[in-house]
Length: 245
Image 1 (cartoon, one colour):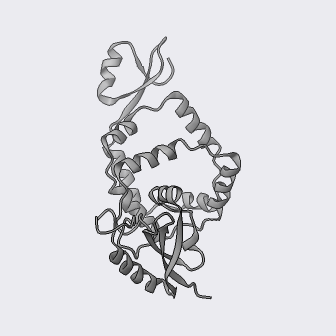
Image 2: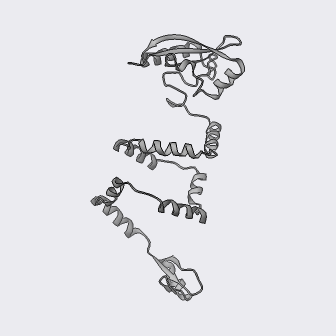
Image 3: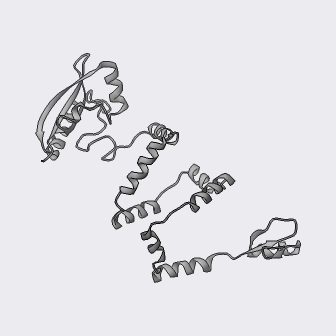
């Protein structure tokens, strides 16, 4: 059965003034309070609201076009053309799509809220089960993610965090996490798979360009690794090559 859509309008109960136009699955989305903006919730909490269906029994594509028409007709508050709190011209399914971006303050608040989240054990278990059921990413998706990562531009703050040495506690946690990993048979087979000639060449070039290092030791001192050009300095100070004094 094909889904049927509608275009609806929300009006304040206090004065019957329209404040939002949307589109969605008929008999469902017009009456939902979830996935609404804070602005929408503030208006509803203060004035109350009711729903009017402007157009009904539509296809999704038809609903998009009609939503655009009505938003333009009633006008947007942010553009000073009307009272609607819609943040886009419609036809996109929400303020987060079609090029719309949250303000810097909103992004910071979202980031802060996400960082301070504490998941219950039950929630963690649900996430774990859900991730196992998720189908593997396609080759096209992996390529897109790879390109996106290559083109990332980090802020100065992020770069400093990445350069910051890890604490002993962090290192210990990483070690414990690594020891507890269980690889699937598929993953193990992939690791066993022979590397391509191109991959081998890259590894070879990387090894050739890597600066050589040596382990040095001295009685009463902690064994350390030093660069080739630093070796002579330490040897003159009584250090010896190797890991055992």
